[in-house]
Image 1 (cartoon, one colour):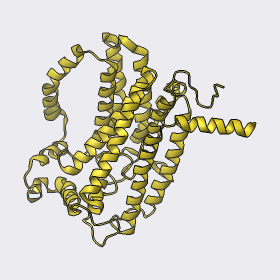
Image 2 (cartoon, rainbow, N blue to C red):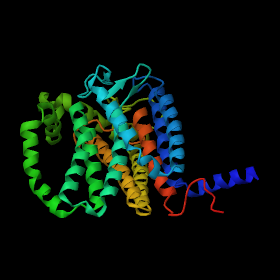
Image 3 (cartoon, helix red, strand yellow):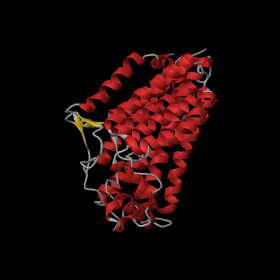
Image 4 (tube, rainbow, N blue to C red):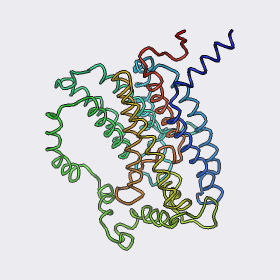
Length: 386
């Protein structure tokens, strides 16, 4: 009898599991492990030869976490904001202490903390805390979102994590937070009476940002995009170096690529991180790049589809927040690689090297899977209605 009950519980769990989303995410992540192994095997990167093993461990741990979270009711843990929000903020604030760490000396920000046995990027976990707490905030406000007091509090809620990472010097992550905030506000039904004044004021805000706030090296990252041949200009050569070699590497694979274990590759600085897409182009060519973009697009669209079947606004807002996180990461990263956006240090989801990033993204997928699993109003995981 006990075995039969356990079997029913397991069967019920897998029946409610968002299998397409989980398998697509694991597939892209497994592809990342293969890329890391190829990089080490071919000697393309001088980084730690264990990085593909670390990536594999993070994949397994992240997948397990996602499966566990999908079985939990998101209503339960989203209300524990008083635990995870202070924890995530406190961890992020450690980047302003001697524990702060730069994985690359030339980086503008010290957004990691060194724990001795490993390094962690706290802002990755701050993203999860923000999506959950902001979804809770929006669901509590409900149809009163357009009251001026509620709008002010919501904007303050969005400004806190954004300004923390701005203070770190992590402009890319700050843009990600801002875009998550905008998408979730739009999905909650913010009125045009607030949107239109912001649109009208945008040119003035951009002018102030450009003339009064942005540093010279930040401006150069934008100006280099308009240079016809930046490598011939000493003023732009250093800034354009990574994008220049990245585009050469991306195009060198042509239609079918050189293969994952070829004899010669174009060297791109930090290729395993933000410019991993250039290595995909080299190894698998244009067709491989299209396949990867299609897989990432499927993941984003599936999350968006899951938001439409959520049984309440809280679940919908969680899905929209995760969708915005993944989508803006993909847009910014591919824009950097293709040379249409400045290099601002945003990794490609589930593909770039990074244990903190992969673990946090799998937790986000687990949240979406929880919303999907509990989309039926009378459903509870591990509860047999019979």
